[in-house]
Amino acid sequence: MKRGKWIASHVPELIAGIAFTIMITVVFANVVLRFTTGKSLVWTEEVAAIGFIWTIFIGAAVCYKERGGLIGMDVLISILPSRAEKYANLILDALQIVICIVLGVLGWIFAMSAANKSSLSLKLPYTIYDIPVAISFAFMAYYAAKRTVEDVKALRSGAEENDKEE
Image (cartoon, rainbow, N blue to C red):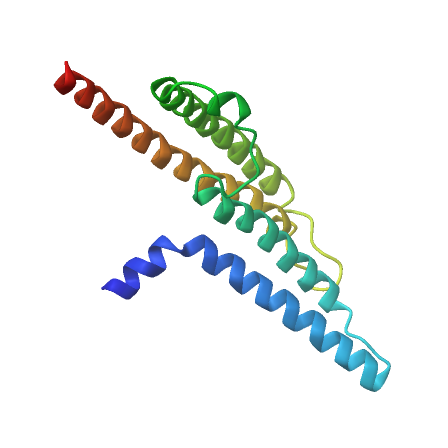
């Protein structure tokens, strides 16, 4: 049960890790093959590109998972009083939910528009190149919603503490 729960809570890390491993393995194998035989496999470039795209976009969601995982500018928020900082974080997290949902939907539309095109060597639908955008923003929207709930709880607990002090 614990293993299943751990896997469910680390899906993006697993996806990005698998994509990265495939990318590195294919590139390494192609380099060794080219070095030893002077020939290379045409399809490895496509597989490496797909692995790279999946690693980058899903990896961005992994970084976004923890507050502060991605570079941010908190200069203005950090000078606010504690309670105002909590409200500012709540507003920003709510705004991030909207932005992530919009970008996720646009990513989905973009990926589906490429479904009829196929790659050159492997004949894979181009959707496999584009769908990580939608998946990544879906994960980010989920994490932003989770943060928003945490922010609301922090505001409520702060309000209860202020009521007790008075």
